[in-house]
Image (tube, rainbow, N blue to C red; front, side, top):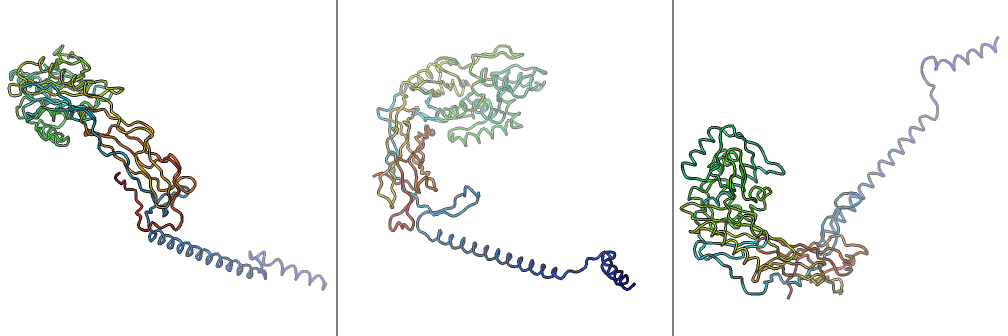
Length: 473
């Protein structure tokens, strides 16, 4: 009995906690929690000390970079994508090619007409010549070159024909008024549908004044607003002797000179779609039927444009653009003749003679020879004599007397190449040869050998280290 009582008491004492949903406390649990808290405190302070030490190193490194002599900067770390300070001293480039070169030979003599004014320009090269009697004069329908330029710039044709327009009774009445005024026109009737391309063809080939006004209102909302755009474009292109009073050229207040119109023609012929709407002898329209291109020399000797014009105030005007081959290149040559008293055919003969004479004067001229030094590379920390060179001959299309500019633009990599330096054939600069109308060729200038970087602790002293190009002596 006693034994049974003792057994029942022991079992009851051990099962009671389980029945009440509690776990009996264990003597080692409190000690385990204390050890965990201690380990967390040690990790917290270790992390704080690591961050503080890293900040101290970064501040010290930045201060060393800023205070160190010679050029330095920030570059992107390839592995982390962050900016980090680097201390790199760059060599000096000393030019060994002349900045200006004049193509040898006598200046060309061009067959300018005895009356009026003329100019000849090669796109991408510059103005070859012009008459001395350049003045701002009425230009008749040559005005439409600017009209087409703005319309095509604002509403590119792409590979299609642009939007289609339905003519109204008001458009038909505008045509009647233009005919009564003696203007050049394209007949339109209410309900006739014409695409943007067809309207531009009517503008440039039969020189329709009513279509010039239609396009101006479509583009800018009104003719006066469009004329403001024309004069803004003229100012942007530097046409200082040019002022527009209308979109068609009927108004004698639309004035310019031959040089300005040659500059405009070169720009206009670079706009996509300009050549395609005028490089054919004529076109057929739904109501008007066959309409000729009034340019008398279109299609002759590479002529692909541009515009004729006539009014009593302007006399006969003609802008002619032709592709001509010079060496292994094809260039666009432009001749402008204004104020001719005889005929369009005579003006065409003048322009063709100017184009032929200009082409005869053009040639491909070598300015920089490939593999010859264009600059010397010097560095105060080494006695190595190194050069920069281009691997291709650098040439321009030009004529005798033309001045060519050679520009050397430093482009030294901030991070040296393999072996703690700049490896051979590293691009260190860019060479450009250009004329008044723009750059004709660009080539990289490469290092002729290995250039070591500055050793640690090297100080330039009184020797400046820079990327500035020094002039050759």
